[in-house]
Length: 221
Image 1: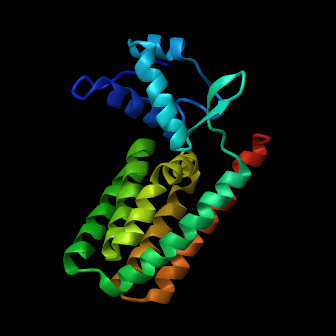
Image 2 (image 1 turned 180 degrees about the vertical axis):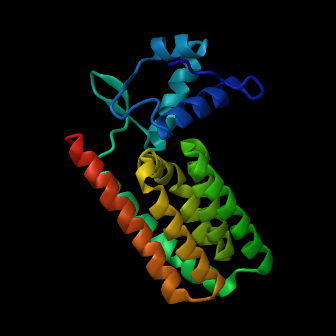
Image 3 (image 1 turned 180 degrees about the horizontal axis):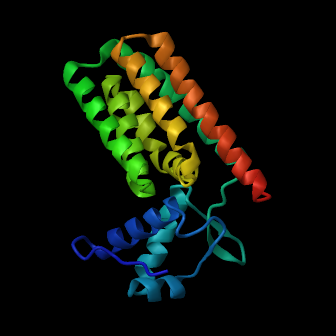
């Protein structure tokens, strides 16, 4: 695996962004040992920005420091999954309910366009594009909810949500269901039906949780 840094931003920021991205998409795998020397060679940099990035990633919950062992990519555990998705379920349901009341015509247009991009990504089975389009859809709904405090909570959980989202998206056999679930959420919000929007959002996260739990069990986690 070859990691590359962005030369257009400060080195410490670039190293952090590179490691963060590769953890989120699974290139750096759960439980993988993160040695400063090895990562420094991969990134062509000294150990100092690596050390700083690892400390920051620990605060993000993406890295764990194990005594006498060093830094490792945070594992994906059943407990962590359930805790993250419990919070996400509550936030997504609230976002959908509020968006059903408050969404503007411009936001409706943005949501339809985002769904079209999502559909194209699904058609190509491009995992990264599907993940980005999925994030965009949910971000538009969160913004349409019109609650700044709620948006802050959603943003604060973004990295951990993305990590589990990508685990789900890696298996393209779920793509048809994802399309149907997103369509149901969008149609309910467009119609201003809070009850249906909330139910569709809840079902979307329930299905995601069941699928990822099954994947974890198959791996013996």
